[in-house]
Length: 152
Image (cartoon, rainbow, N blue to C red; front, side):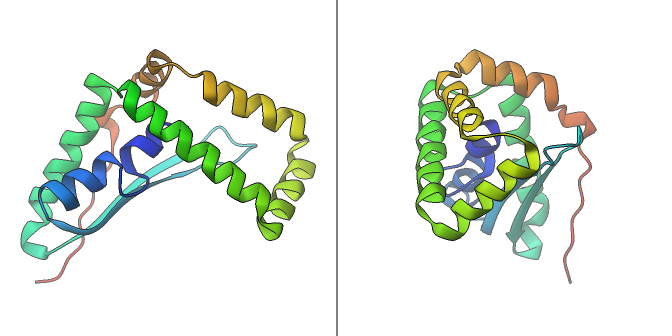
């Protein structure tokens, strides 16, 4: 949920700050990559900005990460993320290709649709405190590796 709130879609904090509020970025999002059998995940943030605005954009991204950790998410943000999650789940289950992928994943992981239903229930029962506790446990702004790329 925190990933969704921070950087997934046009309602995310990242998009709203860089694109809507400051007009610095043509694109801004984040990605959470994980494997069902590995304890390691990667969280990536990317934004496309004019070369002369890249340092300001990076400073704003860093500030958003710090605010996420220090202030956490709001009830409204969590509710919006939940709705987005369930909408995406419904779309996945209504699309043949995605549905067959879900079935294949279930066979691979040993997680049946009962497990998926329980997972969805846990998502729907998350409290703001749960999400904020996870953010503080797993995101340390001082441990993030930052890089910039651009031409002259």
